[in-house]
Length: 492
Ligand code: ADP
Ligand code: MG
Ligand code: ZN
Image (cartoon, rainbow, N blue to C red; front, top):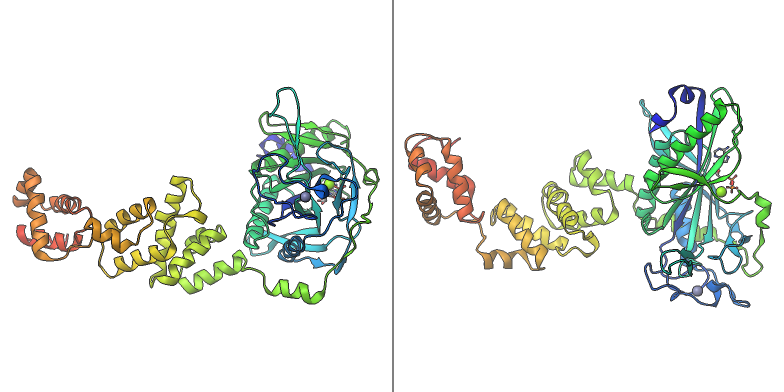
């Protein structure tokens, strides 16, 4: 990625990046009115006088949005300010009917946190400072592809609660910015603050980028790449802007403070509107919203009731379920996967077998069907029951996989499927002998070669019996009986 910066430039100039991240909070209703926040509704069906900015409408702050914003700040180790204020940030744009956005300016909700994004060799953590976390409201959306030659406005998104998270200018590589965002998203999803879906726009990033000669302490002039909506776009835009600024420095030219947009299609940056200076927004305290005063006891209660964060959950999984590092990593990749796994592991005596099934069959099925674990047809308790049956030897592992496929198609208890489809493990010698007879009859050539002493055909015939029984036969018993019939090779 840094290949686009000439090697010499990268040696001479250090990249400096600070990120501003907008995260849509997972509330049912908007920040200052009772309109729904559901994604994907018909345009302008989730609006009211408050979020349309009609004269005289009065905002009422959504308490749950405050709770989620505080949780965000707690996850980032910030100091929560017991008193914060709402301000109006004025600008004209068609997606902003009030002509101002409600945000927090002079007194934000929280300040001064940190996020660890990895460890250096030797174990020193790489920390990135968080300058502030504040609440604000989202704007509407312009729709360019609905009416040919015209632009429409959808205000369903107007007034949805956001938190903005602002990092210190402490990221020094495009990949570090990507890593920081991935860690942030992982934490916020576990904190149940937001779904952080970049496709649906619930996590959006502005990247502030400057360069400075390596010997220089003072920060260089920055530009801001706005509205990046994928991790790869963030990394790519930063890499391009780093290269552009290095080239300016090398040419003896100056970086001009400006706002840029990154176009993923053309993989290029272009200037957006002029970067406003702070005072252009004419911030002033919103007279309709009293200062937000948070009680220390209330904050402590939120702190005490935080959902279990990924790191703690990972450690507990390894301790309670004896998982490998790899399995623990996979199983905490999302809270739904972690919950699903725990649902199975709690009902089944072998947590490592449960882990293998969830990582194997379950995640493959999720991927294959394009569903999510939220509406997965196989309930954890039913999968646990199936694994119990495997463990007790009532069904073979391969037959269990067939049962699982049936459960995916049609929710049913595994016992019922096994009974109906005759998939119970067959260990009764008489029945196994009958199956062996059938298999030998179906494969006369192989049977003859085995009889002639070609013992490596034992495996082929075991396979034939397994197929004949649709996985129900006990393979070890089949092998044993075949070896006895043909003499020797039972251990093979
Ligand atoms: P604004 O609100 O006008 O965008 P802030 O001063 O609050 O400005 O800074 C916003 C972001 O810009 C922060 O993430 C900060 O780390 C980053 N930033 C500030 N100065 C620089 C710089 N010279 N180079 C890179 N990032 C910077
Ligand atoms: Mg900014
Ligand atoms: Zn509304």
